[in-house]
Length: 487
Image 1 (cartoon, helix red, strand yellow):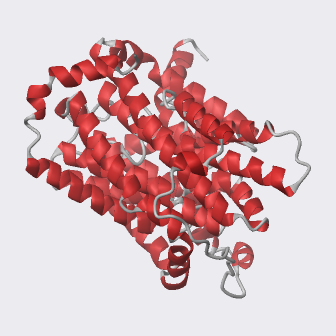
Image 2 (cartoon, rainbow, N blue to C red):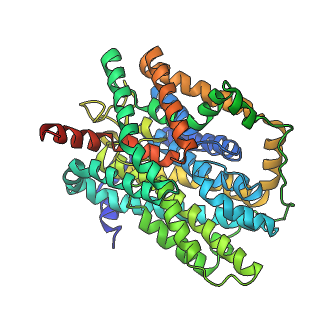
């Protein structure tokens, strides 16, 4: 019944669907295929970041003037492909494929020690497959009434407080909880100050550069640490890293994900994907850690390696389902219901779909709202979102993740220089900083990166730093109230 309004809307807009020409569909399929292959290759590289890899290419396509429906298909395919591809290095090499895969590494490493890396990879891929579809349809079912019945307008004024509450919750769940809470206000004010400087000198605040700065912060801090003799000694390596991969195991080309997972694993992956998808204002990383640890902690009797393996497999399948579901839902719900980036995902990798001046604009960065929210219908989200997700999962990622995972990981680790990729990402960050505010933007991005990298070294993880940025508006409001009250 929850999908009834959307189904009726599809029927009502049947005449509008005719406007979906074969050319547009062909472009959407072509871009989705391109995203699928690109992010398959990027996703198998350990340590790649979602914002650093997805936002720049999406921004370039937006500024090229592509049809908004094609952009949606591209981004959904990129989300699905990246989330599925990162299972390969995480499971096979126990190296995080992306930022969101970091919480899964201990469980994958434990399965690797048991000789079950190939099982871990299959469980994660199946969880990602299920979570992506659940997140997509839950997002549509929630976003439609929010947009249609004016509920979004009622919620908008209070969203900033949801972000602040989410930041506090994520901080309390972190290992360095007191460091996180202590850094909340200062780091938020640093970001607000950088945005004010940019707006004062260039007429607009830096936005994408803030995310890119936080994303590459740990990397930039390590590079600057090389300039300090004592820190440089800690970073010195005597030889190349040695990575041990599990042996290849033959799989079917397209195993049924519901047969790959056990009943309990299917139930947990599906239910927690459904629970976390509507919580679009919370950090995906924070929810993955919180619910993943709850699942892991529910296993009391671990008397044999088989029990440990089942606990680990259930935990990583559930975690991967949550990350995939939240990434899709946190893009669709704010985009379709609000048109404003009101989720960590929307303020990160998906930001160019909301704000990419001069083509797309939205509050609070601009007074005018003009982006995919105003250009697409609910039917467009259903059709082109599905095109992107289906292609991103099935062509070729799910079959390859099941059958050729080890071979791809081996080729990437042997023949693609990790240092060259890091240099590429830093160059992209510098380009975006210069694009937003010239030399000023570049310097402000480096400032945020250095401070963010230092905080990360102290245990204030990147996910919490993103929540600090989302909380800037609420914190400034509280400080204005405190100043007015004489504090």
